[in-house]
Image (cartoon, rainbow, N blue to C red; front, side, top):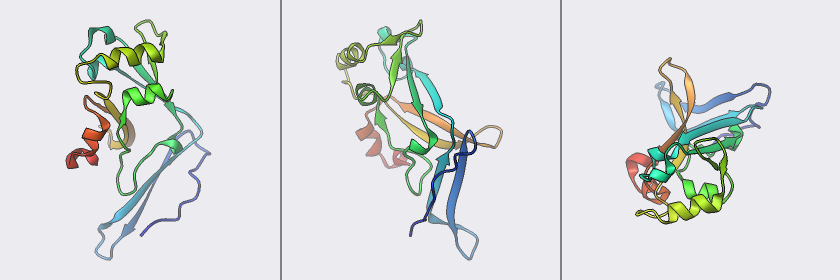
Length: 159
């Protein structure tokens, strides 16, 4: 079962629409879809030393920009796929900044993570729709110190 969903709305800065099938007993069926839209770019960053145990990354940040409609939220879930940080930097889908806010060349970052004990695929992130402390929907960038393939192989983290 699927949903025919038009283009995500582009009239507001950010929008979220949840499409769900409601059973006769009032419960939501297994097939749901969250559609994000809007005309503003999401701008997110996080500190690399939270995911890498390398003193060279102290106060370094990874910086991401995406349109909400380009997030890869999965059908039936409110989270996207896990992505390796190094892969995103290598593909130029993410940028690394040093403590002063200057861009770190991708080649330099990739060389440093390649020297890591656990290898360049040691850190991953994904986007997820969450319920905030104020009981509103929010979008969260979640990171873990493990490879995307490891995280996707664990049933509790697939969701």
